[in-house]
Image 1 (cartoon, protein in one colour):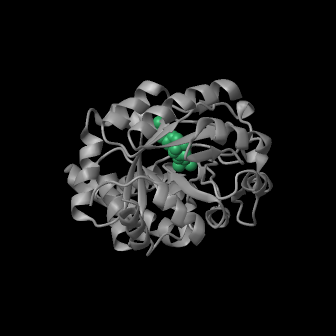
Image 2 (image 1 turned 135 degrees about the vertical axis):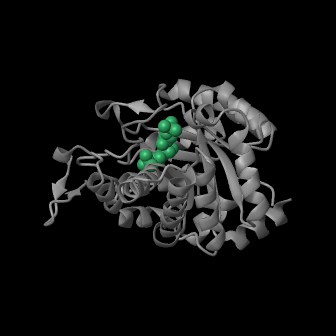
Length: 332
Ligand code: G3H
Ligand code: 13P
Ligand code: ZN
């Protein structure tokens, strides 16, 4: 099964009221955990690599890992560049066989973002590759995404129509209150429930609704959409870790978003937390272990379990592989 783009995925997701999970990949076990979960649930999936992931894995490793996963699993998979920082990186990925790229010009002003996005779209479309762009600024600290909370800004609905028309992009990432990483909100931005657990402010569904009105049927992307699952944070903290006040986006809000024009939901931090949790637990339980296969295999099964949960309970994309494969075939 060759890699697919995201056009058919987003069309079906939009019509069907579900979203496609876009999971970040950095090594073989993560690729395996995600694709095994998606294959068992007959779900489409987007595997995305950041510039940092490509630097870490080196050369063509990630693409070959994804191609290997396609040899053993019969599901629609798109390979996507996450947060492409410049034209050169987007071009390198397009030339390397990625089927989708994000150009992230959100740090530039509106006109400059349009201009730079247009260049990427022109090259990508010439090569049959789809492009995601971003309007608005998400807070967060990652290798290649560093925006201080005070610099974060919601997407302005009155800008989206012009941006989409002028750039020709295929999907649009928006800022409605999500952010990158495991510490999405400061404790003072949250309330606490009866158990003392932090409850973050609701996503700005009103802004999402305004955006949907301005660009009907256009696929919207949510970055920074990990839930920072408390179960994993607790395992990490109970096994020598220190992640105080880690907080994410509650899954019921993501489920609600998945039923709207949001067709792609990005998840990375939850994968990192799941893998770290089980490996910390493993070392505490088995101090005599030193074969990496013993603990990394545990990491892979937690990644798989997490992705199964996201597909069934958050994205709603289970059982949707065949309708996308049929549409891809029909569009050929
Ligand atoms: O949004 C950013 C992703 O979580 C990727 O993070 O740049 O550390 O690979 P990274
Ligand atoms: P999280 O940090 O919430 O997992 O967001 C990941 C992301 O947006 C990747 O682009
Ligand atoms: Zn992101």
